[in-house]
Length: 161
Image (tube, rainbow, N blue to C red; front, side, top):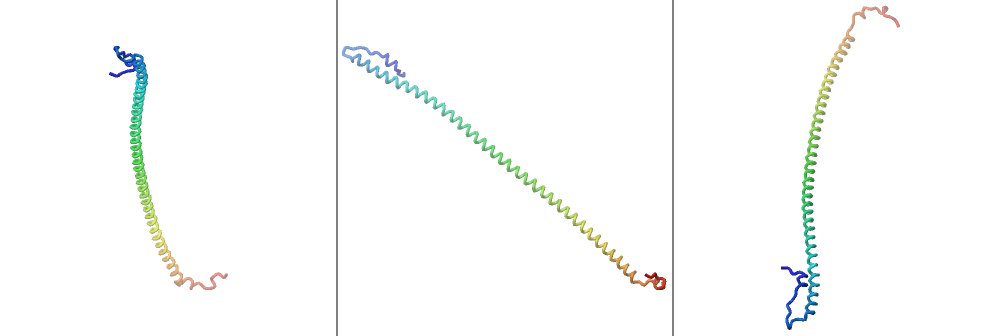
């Protein structure tokens, strides 16, 4: 059983014929009571403080766990954002490459069409040149031919001028 300051204060000793001086014993007991009471109060205060500090430690541990969970969640979120950004960039690059391929295919198709048109125009020019050459040759032949009508016409019949 725990001894309290009141237990010491209320303690009474039996008296004997040649016992201790009662005043001296009472004075000493009063000093013990006073000292013990101070220690007893200090012990209670320390227990209270210990309890308060234990509560604070518990709160700090709870905060620490919450912070750890928050950091883990933030790390996961950062990883998800990074993965999402990576996937998005890959998708953008893929779409850009597809668009570039389509543009190049369209340009190649257009070049082929223009080349075909050019070849067609070149053929038409060659045909035109050949026909024009034939026409000119025919005209030259006609010019080179002697026309009997001019020989028959008398020089007097030609207009003077």
